[in-house]
Amino acid sequence: MITSNDIIAAVSGAVEKLFPSEPVYENLVPQDFSRPCNLVELIGITLGELSPGGVELLYTYRITDFVEVDERHNSHLPLLDLRTMLLVGLFAKGYLKAGDRALKVRSCTTAHNLDFTETTAILSLAYSRTDFDPAAVLPTMEQLTLQTNTKEDTSI
Image (cartoon, rainbow, N blue to C red; front, top):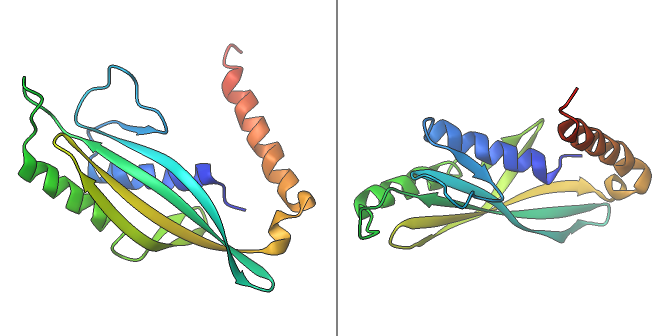
């Protein structure tokens, strides 16, 4: 089973390819972040009916694109528009590859502000209902726990 962390890593990786010299933050941006940069966040997950034996998960991700500003906190709007179109282009092919799966792009919308834009993408993935049985989910949870414990214990 693919996790939301696998998907956010795929979205972040695609954004990094678009803007290779800029930081891409996941879920939280530091208080003193530098511009230009991007923030990728998981906004929510929705469970949908697909068939008697299957379900569809809709993952909603938001990419916030922060551009450079002047001393009055104004940005260059044509540059902001161009960057937004590049971000929308990430989803134009209709799917996003994450691990060994391809998530279908259900929608992609943008919201403009004076110094940043927000691009919201809804990605879907079909699952069998049996994928959610505790016995099927346990190995994934054990792997995530192992990864978390490994990241926490860096003193070795």
